[in-house]
Image (cartoon, rainbow, N blue to C red; front, side, top):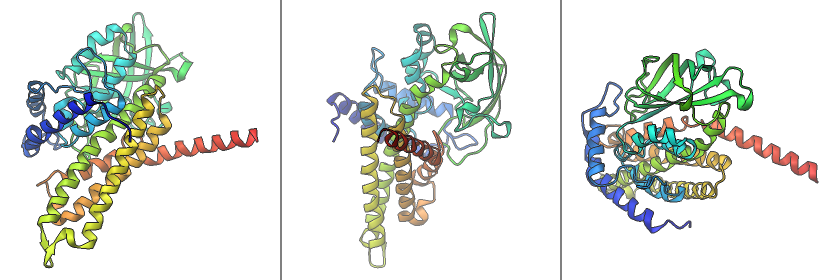
Length: 397
């Protein structure tokens, strides 16, 4: 078993107590938007509690350094014990991934202008990459990106469309990906830091989705003649895809961390229900069909935890961990989906109501199997690597 530092355990244990005692009671708070997501007012209120407890952005230290990935796993799993926990503690997506990217790639100028606002929890952010399918834009294949950027004096001008942009409605900071005209290196992909809202970035709406844990939902966006100062490009022109890889594996893994915490809580709720609810002369837990489902959940939860810590330990070596994070994302998302499904089933009618978080976590995990790369894309990527390794082995035999 990978060892977790005492520093991380101390922070994580405080986070767990905070989420259970202070944040979980807000799960039935009626302040929700028409998508069912928490309102910005509710987020501000629970973040004030986190500041009061000294737990805002607990995975980033006062000097700006980050916990290791293994340490982060311990803390973020605890933050996920309530769907509202990551929002309260500023460990939520896309902010956590955006802070990681800025901290590792951003210039001092960009860190000073944008990163501090995110780490403090005063503002939230959005990552503008995915594009509409009916436009032929980028989805799981980022090389299909059609949003363009063109240098005009000391500014870049960006035009295009984006879709499923989490948190764009209400965000204060955006990271926009576009393809540079006339730049061949790295496919011409560029990233820009922008202040939001901006009149050149127009939110057309946000579809109702199966998940509703993210304030503002997942917006459809049109970008028309957005002018970005050249010094707000993240790194160099044409390096956007490479920077996306820096962000991708840790952000993908942190999703696994948070949703493991939520699935653990679902298992607690379903187990409590099964031990108290009587049917056919005995508690549900004593019926083999129910007991076996909860037993399988324990197995899946432990396997998911081990996959997360294994992948985190690889990332801590400095490796990009693309293979490992693909494996972890598939294994964890599929396992946690089984856990949540079993919890709904064990609880019967109660499991499909909003009386507990179980039905919400079930919906969120179903969406997670698609977000950050569908299971099939990750398996396809892994299969390509298997084929390549086989060819290389055969050639050297």
